[in-house]
Image (cartoon, rainbow, N blue to C red):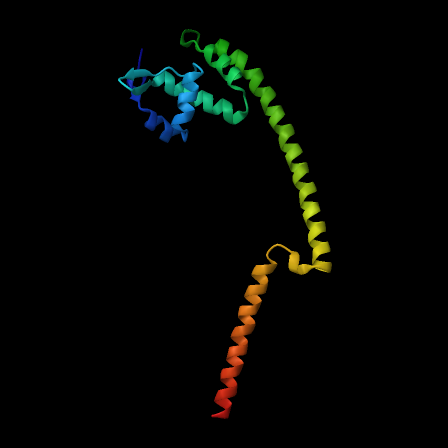
Length: 164
């Protein structure tokens, strides 16, 4: 039995706002045949099926699936079989993607360690030989100058007070 949400329609603006997508992205997915909004004149009208498909597309993209992989999994949707065929195909792909993402995270963690080590080594060498070239050295220098100028100004005032 269809619910009220099954008959609800959405504008492109509503879906963009809800999912943080751009109108250009929705039109792109439409061009690829992944969304099929109805038309009222020049206006696109999306239904609950389009909304559900967009949610799956964006989730699949975030996970790292290609559009072709997402399209294939979405095309397997069949409410009559409670989506079991779709899930049977999608589950191993999701498991494989989880493992690939874990490997990427390990690679990123290692790359970050290497880059941090390189930064530390360069900062140490620069601080020994040319601290003025360290990032932030200009800000430090201008803050130091301002402080010295302020103290110098205070000393001048103290000098004049003492003479008065």
